[in-house]
Length: 91
Image 1 (spheres, rainbow, N blue to C red):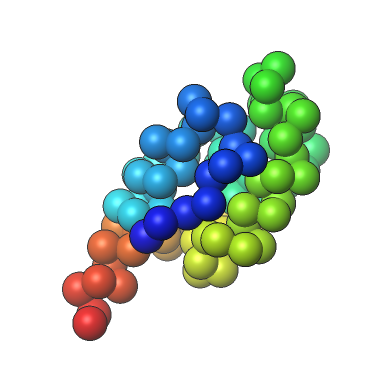
Image 2: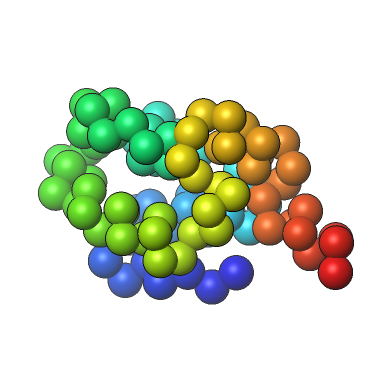
């Protein structure tokens, strides 16, 4: 799945893409973003990502399937199913 990562820091691109496509486990910061935990995301953000929280919210809302974010349970299910690979197998 092609994501619009143009406003996301470059060092995050691969991990985000692999999470969406294959269900790779996200790191602490991106996990908090995916779980809709603003306080934890701000706490775990590096010096670059702490300025991009709005951009992450936009990415979630506009590009990442709703089944892949919103709560720890949804993130866990996405990882366990293998991301978009699960849906490709259903076609």
